[in-house]
Image 1 (cartoon, rainbow, N blue to C red):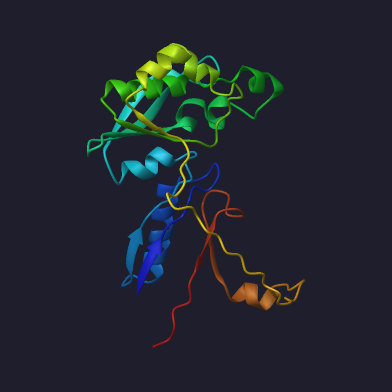
Image 2 (cartoon, rainbow, N blue to C red):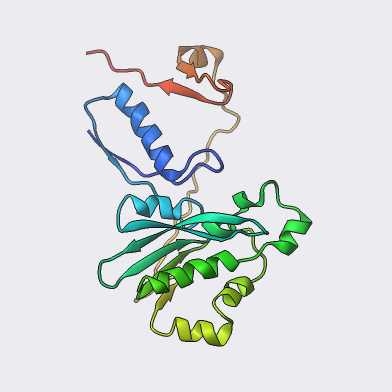
Length: 223
């Protein structure tokens, strides 16, 4: 059997790449003869660059302004194929995970996007003709003001990006038609798994917090 494994990231636990590998590892243990294709996904938020890094271009690292006062190391991808395209992840420079703790009123007011501007400038210096910015998971509330400031201001930023295709959101050329169908069937509620059914499962706890981290080993059909 051929299996496509295409997860997004799992919150603050696994990146999309790590999740795909973990699923593949577990699947392979139960069905070693299946053909697995790993295709981790991203919606542009945290993990965007990590997903692309395994598929195209070269990964570059740059020290930039984090969302507060500290400097952070941010990765971005440069695809040399024509047109030369840079892929930037906002969360690498101003992500929630870089706040050093849960968001507060103080961090909400202080967080900025200056590091994103530095990444865009680095992409331009690398001769990128197209820059794709992955949005999501950011902590900044400055509306992009910090980014513009680090590009030299509005006038300088426009001049710098005059010959660059900057993509932060896209739409199809002919429009996207979405059709919804209402499921009117009635489903039984309050179904509970019996103790006997739970006992029949082969659940194996991990060494680290087995009450949260565990594997359910599939039951192989008898030949």
